[in-house]
Amino acid sequence: MQIDITKYKSIVFDCDGVVLDSNLVKTEAYFRTAKNLGATDEQAQALVDYHIRLGGISRYHKFDYYLREITHQTVTDEAIQALLDAFSRELEVVLMECAVAEGLDGLRKATPQAKWMILSGGDQQEIRSLFAKRELSHYFDGGLFGSPDNKDTVLARELANGNLQLPALFIGDSKYDYEAATRAGLDFIFLSDWTEVAGWREYCEQNNIKVMGNINSITTGH
Image (cartoon, rainbow, N blue to C red; front, side, top):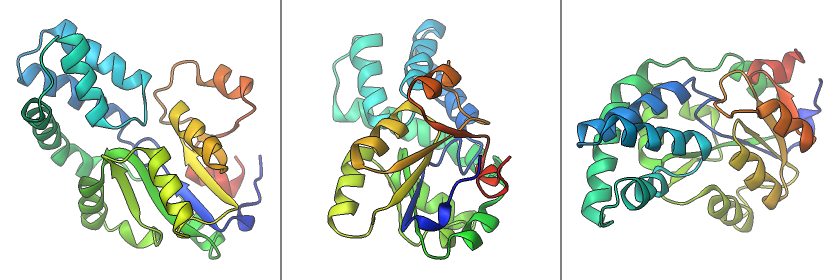
């Protein structure tokens, strides 16, 4: 399916499962984080299941849910921070090693008119540091954004300040990506190769969502 990407003034990319093949390693990191802080296998798996079900949602929200609903602990800033710190340590190595999507150069050359930005559910400072280390920051002249702000908040803010201009395209791999893009008035492409969304085919068909395999597919059409 060919898409006229030259019409967009802005292109927004999710990170995990779109620019980086990092969905699986992040899922595994959630399990190890919970286990390392005393969870049973069942509790750790419940966190993983919730994470997969809410792809693209901030880890702050997921850990709040984990403490409140899975382990039935009091939610404190200290407890959340302990989980966040442990999770960041787990990710530090694996995110440096996971594959980068092919086709970024080709798509960048094909869209000289568009400002690019990253919009992730991951931690904003972590993403900025990672993309600098992996020499990816230069692609994203519109900035790199992540949690604790959620995607709806960031899209609304960047539209309001003029950094994100319409018409714009959001490239993601989760239901939340599609929903946030739609609420903000952005077109959307769902990338299927690395997604963890169960039943994504049916979901995309029901919502008439454009589906492509990966970033390379956007310029090659297959």
